Amino acid sequence: MTVHLDVERRVRLNRDRVLRAAVSLADEIGIEALSMRRLAQELDVVPMALYKHVQNKEELLDGMVEMIVGEIDPPVRDADWKSAVRQRVLSARRALQRHPWARQVVESRTTKTPAVLDYMDSFTGMFLAGGFSVDLTHHVMHAIGGRMWGFTQELFDDTASPQAEPSAEVPAEVRAAMLEQMAARYPNIVAIATSMDHDDDSVVSHGCDDQFEFEFALDLLLDGFERLRDQGWTSRAARRGGGSPAA
Amino acid sequence: MTVHLDVERRVRLNRDRVLRAAVSLADEIGIEALSMRRLAQELDVVPMALYKHVQNKEELLDGMVEMIVGEIDPPVRDADWKSAVRQRVLSARRALQRHPWARQVVESRTTKTPAVLDYMDSFTGMFLAGGFSVDLTHHVMHAIGGRMWGFTQELFDDTASPQAEPSAEVPAEVRAAMLEQMAARYPNIVAIATSMDHDDDSVVSHGCDDQFEFEFALDLLLDGFERLRDQGWTSRAARRGGGSPAA
DNA sequence: GACCAATGTGTACGGTGTACACCTGATTCG
DNA sequence: CGAATCAGGTGTACACCGTACACATTGGTC
Image 1 (cartoon, chains in turn blue, brown, red, green):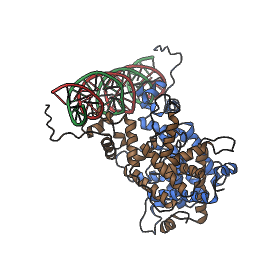
Image 2 (cartoon, helix red, strand yellow; image 1 turned 120 degrees about the vertical axis):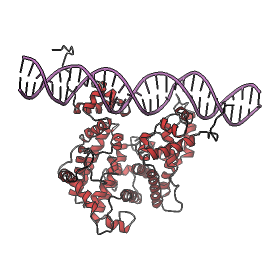
Image 3 (tube, helix red, strand yellow; image 1 turned 30 degrees about the vertical axis):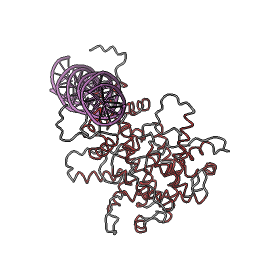
């Protein structure tokens, strides 16, 4: 038996411990100072040890995002869609604000991890449950996306599986199974994605028209602005009155 | 006389050439592959030569952003505020889309360079000219900010001078001069910034309440969503009808 | 022609992510 | 019990990064 003089046995590293350490280290020293070496040092381990639990730094960042998404409260029960959405967004915002680096990292990530997809699916469901059509929900999700995340753009663009490693050719049969599994786990997202492809009887099957989405949100805001102006809106009155700006 | 066999004399480098090369190189190879070394190589020059025209990489990125802001069309004349704003935003969007890396870089920058301030001031002016109160304009700018830029947050937070190097203590007298100059060049921005500080007779002098700004935009969107739902909005009808979603 | 500031060069340092070969210790099996 | 296995931790090494600093070369001015 080799004699290690460490008073207590070293705790085994694992993915969760790594991620947790990364998050709190980033909180302390800032995201730009977070390097694999620095993180390893924090965990009393040699840098390369981390790579046994995380493929590379990119995946580390993805993991950190998942950790934060996990901090967002689940939807409140027994509330109308609007206040439910409102509370959820504010909860998401609080989570992001707890970690100053989070916004930047979330926006830089392009791969959708399961936790993110879960959140999005649940979020989508709140509108559907609120009586929104699939069509409207789709555009609404785009419009509000930027308010809390940066995933406005590529969200529904392809129905590719979440970070399934694109290992060479996909057997096309496995592909069907994946999509089925996807539909089971993320029914709302899939509903929207599929409706996009063939809601035709319009001539062109528009995949997902970025420009349209952008203008949708823009005009929604501009119309709102105009209404407020015509009502003689003031922030003082709004503060007093509370609630929605369209008093 | 040293014999340089270069057929033609080497063109002198300058800041503009550096920035221009950086932009188009980033277009080609992506922003993450753009290094000082790679850029230098593109310009047939040793890496350190760049530092004669740009303080460091951060400033290079700032310069690239300025270049892009310069691509945004000036406001159209003789149009109502709404279509003027609309066209301007869409122009900004086009500029950003021409350079896939731009969005990310713009959002990562925190320092406001003159070109950016010019754009923002002019943008602000469009609302004021459209009959919006200074108060409402302030919140509107925050609400729309994220639609095209990432400067939602820290915009009006301090009235610090634009990238004036914070060289030690500012003589407090120079400070006044700077502010005056600022007011001359960016009247609209300054109008809003100063109105924030003392529009009181409310008890607290609220600097710039992030939370309020966020909820303002959020509720504006939610109210808009609700209206569309109640109207039975569909994207097909909207596409046919064109124009604003609140048909 | 001599000077001088601005511009370009060369070298070097400390940082990064991570490939790859290796060691180690706990668990499993004959 | 001893040997085998193998996930987890180690050490070294490489290519690349931004950039400080001392130096060489220029083009323009008197």
